[in-house]
Image (cartoon, rainbow, N blue to C red; front, side, top):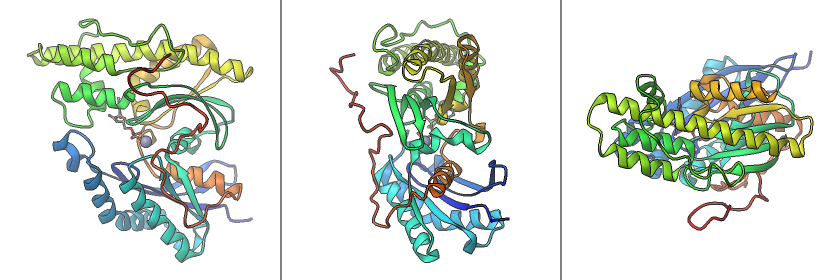
Length: 356
Ligand code: KG4
Ligand code: ZN
């Protein structure tokens, strides 16, 4: 039987240095042979956000070791790698350059094809790592830097239906966390705090909830959280604020996703698959609310496994595998692209004065 392709994936677009080896099984399912992720939480904690130069330096220090570890843990011989896939964008240019150049160097030394991967496409197809996923599908991508509804027509073909006009959802979680004294990135902790508080204690705004189609906005919500955070004193009140924030987000996503379903149906009459991906997709309450909506609207909900919601290199290798099968390779002078959008035709919708 012919050997199934083995792909090395490399990811350094933000604050995770990651390398992974995956192989397709004979039945088409995926074997994640290794998936090494080194986070930089401790480096950026005191700054309350990612500092690009520090992140890039750490990637440069670790990428060699992390990749060696991924190859070692996979148990494969490096000569059996069929292609090297590395994130080329979007992300911080100084960070992207580290993994991209490292990936190109390995590809050149092994004389195996190089594949430049869009990080967001990695999130978009991450559920393929553990389940079958057919096109088309509606994608809600919610991470630290992006919040978008996209119709995924096929690999490489996306139509954006809605986007945030200001903050990303992960950013809103992290900023709320910071305001109540939780270290960066506080998103996961907000979910924990929320379990201990009263979700109806504070009435928070739901920006552009009755207009703007399935576009999203979280800046006004952040301002409201800022005001309340100045008045609260006890731990219980912090739990209440986290719970009220979590409830408000659930309500916003429920309403906006319902609109996105309609928009998606307009272009894909029979389409009924809904994928939620990106770091915030690890939030169990958000999953539950969106699962309920899918049940009501006759959509099938699909989520990546919890450990593959955040940034990782297995999802980059997954895109690499799909492109490898289609022989979509890139030259070694492929540039880093910090603003690589999935839907290049979508107009820029950010900042003051945006008309919806
Ligand atoms: O996809 P990701 O790892 O990185 C980007 O590509 O941005 O997403 C990271 C974001 C952070 O803002 C983090 O706080 C948020 O995802 N996040 C969560 C949860 N887990 C991670 N937000 C809410 N609830 C969670 N359980
Ligand atoms: Zn990401």
